[in-house]
Image 1 (cartoon, helix red, strand yellow):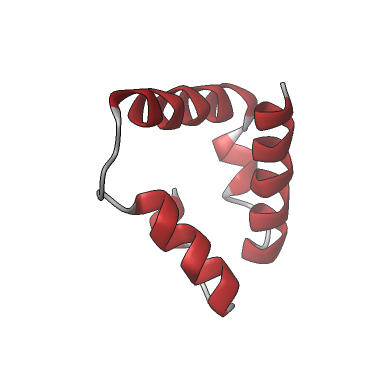
Image 2 (cartoon, one colour):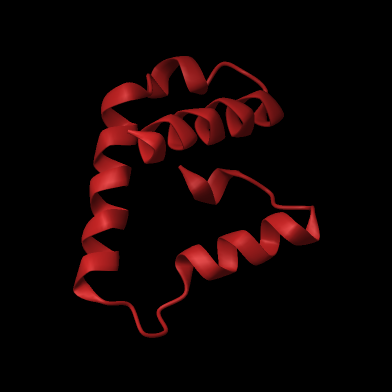
Length: 71
């Protein structure tokens, strides 16, 4: 899903780079990433996402991730 997005803002690129970085990933960090990804996929209707604008998708996914992290 992330491959379909084009990242334009420098601060977003830095965030994505940090998130996807393989440097010093602990098993706990990797587990957190997998858990968040799995929970995000449980909440997001991918079929609906395919029919809306990329900017809106990015906004919706970011909001869903924030809610997951807060939980």
